[in-house]
Image 1 (cartoon, one colour):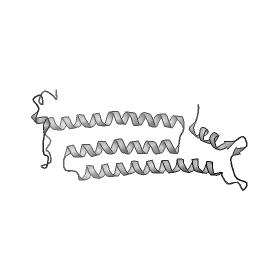
Image 2: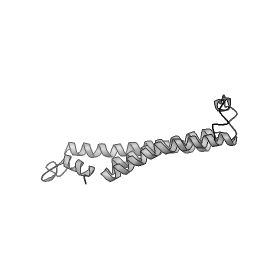
Image 3: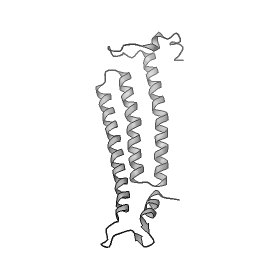
Length: 149
């Protein structure tokens, strides 16, 4: 099984071990690759945590169930994307890359569909809308009542 860390190690090592300067420090190319990997994982971790925080704040602060569902589905998909990319950058094994990619694909397929179904069920149940709602296109539709069956 090929490991992404082995590829990184192979790219930064020669036959005698890590490429170092005369005093035992890593050479500049190895240092840049390791730094890029660490900065990438930190960037994606912070981005994922930002989306999770903003989504949680939206669920807490937004006025009705439809706005809250929108905030929760966005924070779940984008926050999870950031966190999984941070894991991929930090760990980098083929097994972790595969699992994180499958998690991202499943989340991007399942979360919006689930949120859409919950929104339709809320509409059918007559959930109260925010008083600032401008237009309700679903109720104007001729097939609105049959659309939920």
